[in-house]
Length: 346
Ligand code: TXA
Ligand code: MG
Image (cartoon, rainbow, N blue to C red; front, side, top):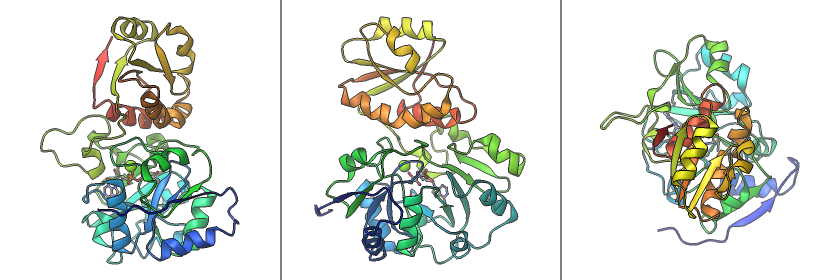
């Protein structure tokens, strides 16, 4: 059981803010701090301290076999965490770090099993958010940081949603405003024969292939794992990103979508649609997630929109189907999990 503690919420906009000193100290001493990153807010602890990492799992209600991503502020920290850094990994780091890319390699003995979920690999990323980097530097240790939501809920892209999930469970929440990318980092493993994408995110498959040549996309990115199938990324097997409302994705052009919603919606429904659709939905309540032709705007909104569906009291949300290329693949991946793969073609 976790004892209720006082969670301090502090607003920090400047990476030279003196209060980052006490945040760093708290992390060094084994505390939990929610930190901003360019993707989503993370729930950080000293990645090399197994007891601190155990507290992350308790605060989130996270299954212990779901490994954590280790965040570094300087490339020199990478070598001690992994057994070897191949050329391909260095090329990725050169092209995309700091930024929303996580690279999985065989781990070193320094990384506790609590951090790696008992796998022999470790996921590492160097975030670009200046406050995230300042906090890692002040802590002086690499930081394990999953998204700062209760396990299963949409990842938080602002401090308000972190507070809803984590108040009373962690020492600090550092509020630096909204996250710019809005979905979590791309996860790629180089611990397999061929580079393999495990989770789509801010660095697209096309971008990865421009550096590595062909990249395999794990089938769990698109579709549900078959019964008994082993997840390459343990996170993929759990129900994910769900609001309390039931989400149904309606695949088809706008007019067909609208017809479907009009014939199925009641006063407890919401249309989870694009901005340009909202004014055409009649009396149906709407929550928008970006512009139809702009996957980046959809990514920035998708998690907030899923939480807003609950906030307006909707129990069913009819979602429009996003474009699946580029950044859209990351949006699709999150939405289809929120919908438990429930897609209706119209
Ligand atoms: O953008 C992000 O990556 C955010 C921010 C806070 O940095 N963090 C994040 O962490 O999304 P989390 O724990 O919510 O998602 C990590 C995902 C999970 O699906 C996990 O299973 C997978 O990465 N993962 C971590 N280490 C792995 C490993 N060694 N092998 C396979 N999958 C791994
Ligand atoms: Mg997460």
